[in-house]
Image 1 (cartoon, rainbow, N blue to C red):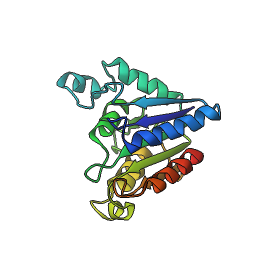
Image 2 (cartoon, rainbow, N blue to C red):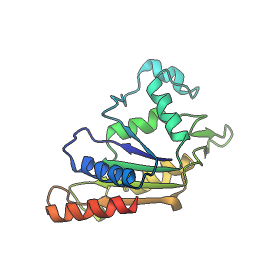
Image 3 (cartoon, rainbow, N blue to C red):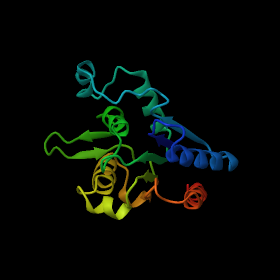
Image 4 (spheres, rainbow, N blue to C red):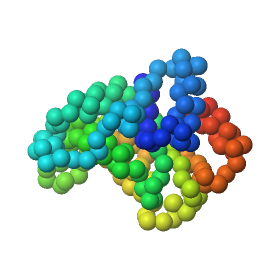
Length: 193
């Protein structure tokens, strides 16, 4: 099952156009998929003191988090769609990782060494699709590259999602490019998913 994790608040955004292009193509191909739309679902990315009591036990009091975990268990492929804000993931997506990827579900920690063993080995392929107002090369060179070096190479890898099976596709200068380039990207991205 393909699961799309979408993190943008505005239906008029280019990120939403990417989501629509991909889901329409999957529907045409009759390929099964599910969408986790964090904003539409009203997901709260902020930890409360009450939640932290559960966090260290690998538990959650929220049915939405449990629902997301069930969707991830059914998944063999993940697609993330999000804007790069301040050189990093949006807070909504970071909160998704913090609150959903719990101990015992997404990883276990070796008590002696502190190393993590990822448990999401059912995910065989991951595509990270991001947009920004700057070039991908600039993002890669600044701030240690939070997308590739931190999100893909560390976080996803620590969850059991292998780097070799993860592809990062970035659409640069989303606010400055031409409509023709935007349309071309939508066509290409929907055929590559």
